Length: 168
Image 1 (cartoon, rainbow, N blue to C red):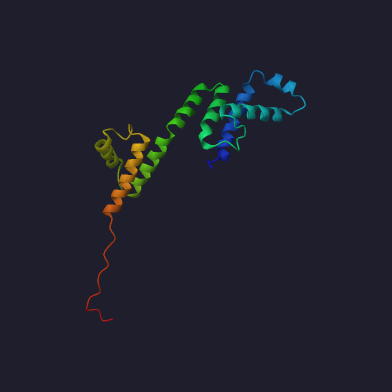
Image 2: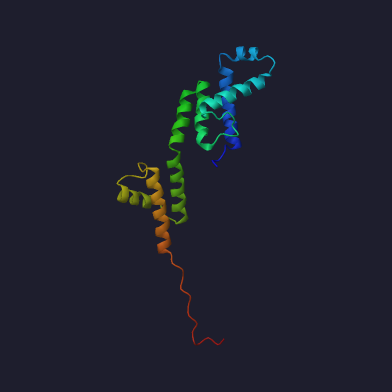
């Protein structure tokens, strides 16, 4: 089952949705038509509909997955008039697999006491590109190579055989 949104992610979407709702030119007419509902209920109904538009039919933030987070957030940012922020959110989401791989690469290097230059040399040798140009798949292959090379170079210490001079 795909991972759901965290409380912080839901909060970020709700804040962006509220900004968008407050800027929505038809808000007052919508609230007037639904005068039997509170303003909060009107906002919730509008947010569910707009979430469904962005998330491919999923209207509840409780049912949204990590894969839908950036799309929904960017949708509300656009509706709030924050086009450049929405573009940044989408660009960050598209590059997320690479960013995750870079984080794991950095962690593997630190665990083994190696520098980024070590991984850079490997990348240039294997893929003819820099770390910045490497794809997420190439970065993951570097991570596994670094992990496996480290295992091959660290061997357990030999246990000394008991000597005949031992009095016990």
